[in-house]
Structure formats: structure tokens, C-alpha cells
Image (cartoon, rainbow, N blue to C red; front, side, top):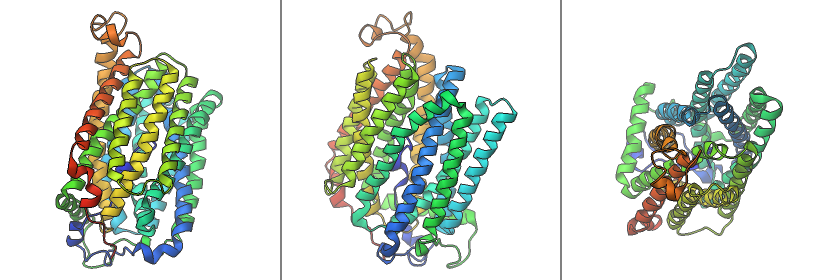
Length: 475
């Protein structure tokens, strides 16, 4: 779910108001109709899918390895959550520029530059590990830079995918992407555990480097076939500075959300639910490791990833065709209930069931939400809308992670310790001991998610968003 954590954050499209901004529409922007590119859609998407899978595998593996290493070195939940926060903040800061890069410049050059930067950065950290003692601060910096580069790359890649795939295939495309991520999340934690046991963090970093190289080659092979989907707006119309273009693109994305209030509501709802979900998934590692071994953690995460795979398989079929918004709301409510249940127990078997249910529902919800955005918004300034929505979600997520890490370390864990201040009140029904403070945080996140999803289900217009918001125009 995290790997990527958040497909919903980057699968948005641009709006009708954006086309009336500072460009001459989709044709002037150099964005071709999906139907004009349909001949190349399958091979290009297949190669990009493999490339993204390689990057996802490497990111999941190294994220798991770095998280275990930091928690093992410091024993602090806050230090562990700060590594995730560093990635979120850096991604948020580059998002306005990521959208402009994807809209303005040749996307093959953008992706290639990001790939070279990722390879160079990972090679540098591997060398640094061998020549000097690696500190937590260095890993924070590496995580932040890697996340920023990945945000630039992901935005350009997804503009290409949305440009070449016909609208009727959007749900299936989202499902296929979810399948690859789920498979990655089943295999990567186990692979990271083996590597950490046998070769340590340098072994995990070295494998990550190899995956980056392979993914870069696949992306290059794909984008050489994409033709019209690679062109940005650079060179068309009057020349403007990069900062002026970034500002105009940002205002265009805001204009679309203002023009479609239901899509704005979907953005706000998605940000709230996703941030609660991210808080729970980030805290899963310290909650499990507080009372269980890393092998149990790997089992819980692998079964959760199996649930994500099952949910993505459901979305990749033709079963989900209509009522996509209702699917989103119901699945979000069920995944919130699973998070709540996970916080109430210390039994690994129940954690496994809750993880499977949570990620099954989450994957189906992400696929349906992604298909809605891709179907409803036109292609103009698409990268900038990706960036705006991702930045808003990352801002809320960063605040939630910062507060959540502090609450776990400084408030909830001490209060629910064996001799803590809440042992006679909350602890009498929730339990006391190591990890119960994080469990209580799970309980609270799940309860808030259920409340938000329930209120959304009660809103008739939001439930009928699929019917009330017009389909995008491609020409």
C-alpha cells in the first residue's frame, strides 16, 4: 500500500479550466489523443509497467531495510517515522516543479535525467557506507533526495501512460499497476530480511542499485516508442520562464478544482483517508517489532501485500465497471475497520487477517479512485494537477506523521506502559506494555477513518460523482 505508497496521490488529470489558462489547449501543448497513440499503447505500457515494477521493488526493499536498520540502531519510533517524513516533505517541495517539468519538457529527457540521478545517488551512498560510518542523518538525506527524484520521474511517466491508454481501460491499468506493486510487496520484505541478515544494509543498497539500472533501461526502451506522448509545451507559443510556467500551471490546476467542486471534495476526502492509512502502515513496523520478531513482521507485511494483490486482481478484471465512487467509499470504510481491529490486539494471526483485509480494500479503492480521476479530467496541464494533488496530500501526511511519531514516543507509549499514567483507565480495557501506545494510535486512526467514510457515504452528491461530473474531452 505504501510503496508506494499512495497511487491515489499521483493518478490525477488536468481540468477544463486549465485548458483556458496560458496555453492554446491540448493540441498546442503537444498532447496527442489517446486514440492516436493506441497502436503503441500495449508495448509502451508493458515496458513502463516493468520499469515501474523494478523501481517499486527497489524502493520497497530499501525502505524496509532502512526502516529496520534505523529502528534497530536507535530504538525510537520517532526516528523511524522521520525517515518517512523526510521522503514526504522532499516530495512535497518538488511537486510544483515536477508538474511543470512533465507539462513543459520532453518527458523522455525528464525520466532519463531522474534515472541517472537516482543511480548516481545510490552508488554514492554505497561507497559512503564502505569508506565511513553511516549515520542516521545520512540516510535521512538519501531518503529525501531519492523521494524528490522519484516524484519528478513518476509524474512524467504517468502523464505518458494516461496519454496512450484509452479511457475504457483506465480501471484495468490501475489494477495492473496495483498487481505489480502487490507482488513487489510480497517479495521485497522477505528479500530485504534475507539481505539484512546476510549482507546487511550494503547488500540491500547494492541490489537497489541494480534494479535502478534495469528500470532505467526499460523506461528508455518504452519512451523511444511513445512519440507524441513525450512532447511537452516547450517550444509552442510564446516562450516563458520556467518559474512563470510553474505559476501558470499551478493556477490552472487550481482553476480546474474550483470549476469541479465534487472533484475538490474527492481530493479532500482522499487526503484525509489516505493520511490516516499511511499513519497506520508506517507505525506497523514499530508496533509489531515491539513484541515480535522481524520474521513475524515480514509475515504480516507479506500477507498484507497478498491482500493488495487480490484487490488489484479484482480491479484488473471487468467486474468493477460502474459505481466507482461507491466502491471507493465502501472499501475505505472496510480498510479503516481493519486498522481499528489491528490496534485492539497483540495477536499476530489477527494482525495478518487485518493486514490482508486492509490492503485488499485499499487496492480496490485506489484503482477505482484513479480511474475516476483519469476519466473525468482532460489531459491539458495534467502533470501540474498530479503535482498539486500530490503536494496537498503529502502536506497533510507529513503533519500526521510528525504528530503521530511524537504521540507514540512521548505520550501514548509512556502512558500505556506497565507503570504508565493510563494503566488504570485506558489500559484497563486496552492493555498495557510495550507497543500498546502504538496500538491505541491504530485504534484512533481506524475510528477516524470510519467516521470520515461514513460522512462521505451520507453525502448523496459525492456518492453519485461518477454520474454528475462529465467525462474528460481528449480533443
